[in-house]
Length: 90
Image 1 (cartoon, one colour):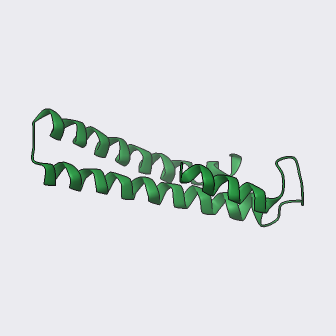
Image 2: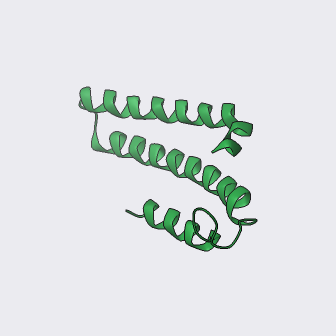
């Protein structure tokens, strides 16, 4: 993923924010906060993860799949994209 180096700091900042959100979920559970609070924190974290996934996936598509050689080392660009999407929904 050498292409992620260009955006390394931005990606790391996103991951650190997600880490803080997960820690907030843990604290909320430890403090026995209400379901609504916990659910809100979980959905916020999920949204942040989806945002991170979207950024990395878009860059992957632009960098590796759009200009990918047909049936290259990792298969066709189409097959790579299908594999990534399938892994997301597991």
